[in-house]
Amino acid sequence: MRSIMPVDVMALADVLRRAAKAEILPRFRRLNAGDIRAKSEATDLVTEADEQAERFIRAEVQKFAPNALFIGEESVAADPDLLGKLKDAELAVIVDPVDGTFNFASGMPAFGVMASVVYKGETVAGLIYDPMGDDWVMAEKGGGAFLRRPDGDAVRLAVAPQKPLEAMIGMASAAYFFGEQRLQVLTNLAKVRFFASYRCSAQEYRVFAGGHVDFVIYNKLMPWDHLAGTLIAREAGAHVAKFDGSPYQPTDFEGGLLVATSRESWEILRREIIG
Image (cartoon, rainbow, N blue to C red; front, side, top):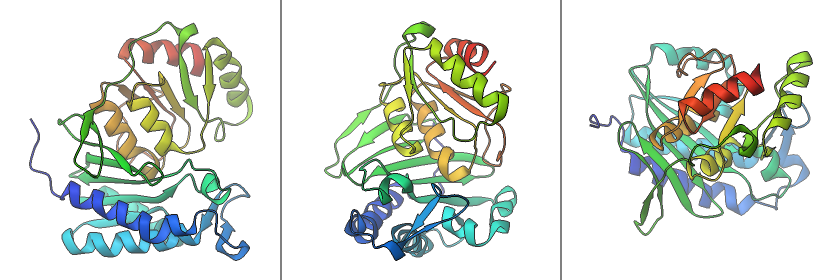
């Protein structure tokens, strides 16, 4: 049974959509060289769309959740100490204004806008908006996961049926595996039918929760990348845990993350792929 939600989730969904229409889509395939900058490396980008969309979302969230701690990816890039405030916040709204910035800046239509609500240390709502398809996947804790469209149409999401390892397909990002672990994981992934990486967790969680792939694997944990997606995955029937088997929490910023269609599939993938 769902508890009373501390934030109006549909209002938040509308904000993500309006931010995309006002600040993101008008800049898609129209960015100038000066609108794109590298952060930690050449493929870690920020654009005018990221920054302006985050400003838009923050201002709108302030109107209906003035007491919430607002954490955006670009805000943390400017002030890394902001992330540490999450552990003490009773209520927080966490946003990735353009997930898949590399794709967006390259003109590829695989990006999304993500938001999650953390209340008393627990993720209670997650939303992923796809500007190109003009729809959301979203979940509230205990309420199931849904694909929702602006006309009010809603379809309940469910993960794929369990499969043997050799028949599994999935999403696995090797970008933040290093050294021997990287070699081991990439070698072991030959055991599945095939895997891919969209370089966009928003789209990867969407295809997983929709029942199209059997697992997702990540080795970098930033809350704006994973809180929304993991809640949606759980509400669609998935088993979600860090590589060591412990639950994934909003304040976990280190350690790998494995999401699978069932506990049994999770155990097989952990043993055979992560090692």
